[in-house]
Image (cartoon, rainbow, N blue to C red; front, top):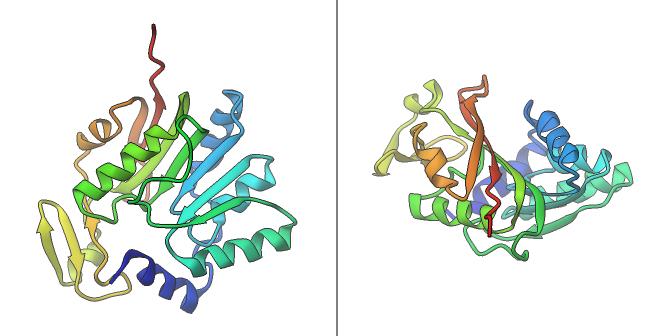
Length: 213
């Protein structure tokens, strides 16, 4: 099943699903603001919890997602709040429709791991391409297979990439990263923090390296 269809069905059936921002987003937003940053990209913005939160705080926010129903819910929420954001419907594995060094901050919360390794690497490369030198990156991915995912039948299609055969994310790949993999995935950046976020997820916060002449 295509990546957009699975979560599109979830948003159609369950609505927004997530309402509150991830607990790392307020601190990330503060760091970007202290760095004189304004323009942010949410990769895999879903139904808009981070888009709305950041727009409420005066950021220029962009969201990219493959699920049209998620984007429709985001637009509805923005309109209700009297806010604006730039939203784009496309796969995160295709080249992003943004120029090089366009964003002050880029982030992806529990999204970028939903692909095969070469796809994830392509998305990570695009995140770094559109980030300004000195700009900040925040990504969370699963720390390991959760107890629930271990209970669900899944097929390992490549090393540490599992595709559930049942459940609400049936057919959607989940790549499980080793902690040492993440810095290499974002090789254009210097790691500021890397730790467990308290929800069985790994978190990496990094700054894009400024190349000296």
